[in-house]
Length: 610
Image (cartoon, rainbow, N blue to C red; front, side, top):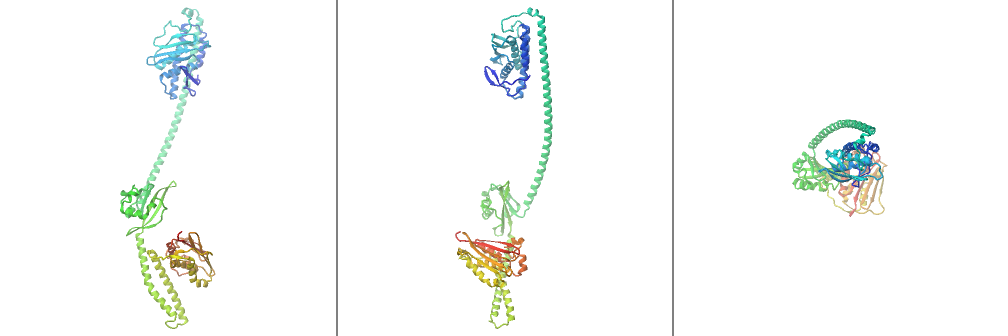
């Protein structure tokens, strides 16, 4: 029978929390005890019968304690042996509705146990259960200590009995009764039929006990089978998990090999990259430098890798490098740069590009790319020097030709006929174009050499624009262009400019608009001002610029494909010169254009003190 959960077990009349906080696995023959009590109440009060009851109680105590130990082990409850004896006795007495226990003494070392059993005064079953309780206590103690002991009576009364444990066997004539009634063997012999009934009853009870034990065995076997089934299921699950884990490990190994191969490939690319590479991590330590960067900076990687910038700047070549690049750039305090030109030493010019390295939407480092442009700059300088020399050499004879033609056309060298004048005027115009080209080439040379000197003064941009318009008025009227100059009613703020250079820039923009706008087209020049700058724009309805060529507009010698078909003459330097002039004044120039619809160029110049 399943043990009922008890909310409290009383030990020494103190309530303690029951061990069985959920339905236990112990089996207590509660019904058996109740049936036994009813049976014993009808037996004659004889020593032989009482001894048999004692032995039955002893076996009950042993079996209960075994189950109690199994329960503790299963629930992983650690209890001292004394507490096990106390709690198992209390639990069994409560479950069997026996007397109330009070442990007077319990000393396992000296095998001392004294227990007081108090009975309910209303209970009419005292004598019959007394010997059963003695046997239970003796059985529990024997099973717990593995000592053969006996439970003796120390003191008795109508409502309580004081028991003790002893190694001394029970005497043959020892009284098993609480009361003073005596029985003898002759009385038992005088009632053979009664004795047969008693023995039959006991046999029946023992059969029931055997049946219950068989039921217990069957249950245990079923539990074992269930456990084996669950173990098999677990083993199968573990086998599946093992196979899955092996597959995962194989995938991981394959991924590792693939990652290693990719790493080797990336490392080979880095090592053989034609540009120098420097990688700084989040702590501003140099974590990577490739062989090309070692050659450019003339330093070994083992001397600088994994070292902070504070230690790197102690190296002479790196100190110069960091001073030119800027510490704020490396430490990501300012935005990245693209192809910033620095001259590290006399024969070494580099283009610096910085790239932020991102990971999970955060910057984890900075990559600096060093591109050696020394040779390109040398070739470019040689070209510039050649152009400069050639332009200067050409300028003198062209100027002489110009003045001679002018003298002939003015009649200083005698009269000429109309036919001669026509040819000479065409020659004069062509010579002027050559002089203009030479001047443009010289201007480009000065810009590239940094010798384009600016002499600024506070000037009205409106006046400069009006003078340029006036100089181009004839050609505008000849092409019947609808020209309009829009300016604010309020005078524009003065700007600090080099009048000659700004005039040249505006002339170049206006010339392009006039040259590439067909007859009866329109050109609008607009001036405006804001709090910090004065803005200029010139919009035409000319041939426009093809979209795929927009990125080349401010390059040297660039002329769009449709422009070369429309107007064969032109150097392709006007917009390049204008851009350098505007930017040298701290301004910015840009454009909008659509092929066959027109082009608008904009630029602004800053107002002083803003």
